[in-house]
Length: 275
Image (cartoon, rainbow, N blue to C red):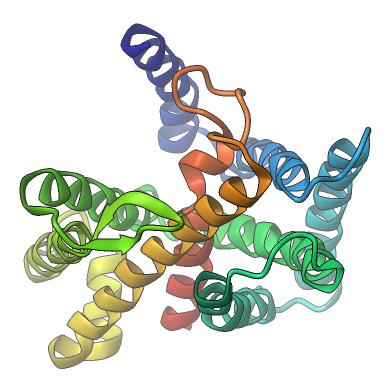
């Protein structure tokens, strides 16, 4: 299992890193587009679409992604801010609602809402990561680093100190101590990066310039919190769908959604906060 996990990680890095670091923004956008389409396919499976339903849903997501690019860039000539706002509203309202109330997929209105909202969430995430890439390689990597820090910090803090379950009915392995550890990792590394200007411009230096040092911690806290919400939200969908992983597309790692669940809220919310 570990060997498979390592091999998959190496292959993914061999594909993602060169394109992120050296390819054009267009090539990067195309690659992330494929990732988003596969994630949409998994979303459709988790929402129990039958037969070719998940494939059709993924195609709709892909077409919506292309259409949104033409609408915002070509016809309207504006930023993707409205998409970030819609995705932000979903995560601010629907995310906590789902985690607290745990509506089931048997509720047809909720399931239909998630099918519609999923398209918005995936398109906003794609626009956000491409927007971040246009600001520089260091910027997009720093934005991804926020989620990685929250995840790594939560893992080690949870292993060492975890006692109080964060959401036992959704993800029994997650603890409050782990979540706090992830938050501290983001705060500490983010503050150091913002203060030193390491590889600026990064999301850390951009936040420091926009919010000032007094509100910088609040911005980092918001992103760390929504990385947890994104993770728990996908865990809830998997639990209700009765599956361990969103798919088996990535041997040893599960599915695409399993790898990007925390990024789905963080990316658009971060770009929305930066304006």
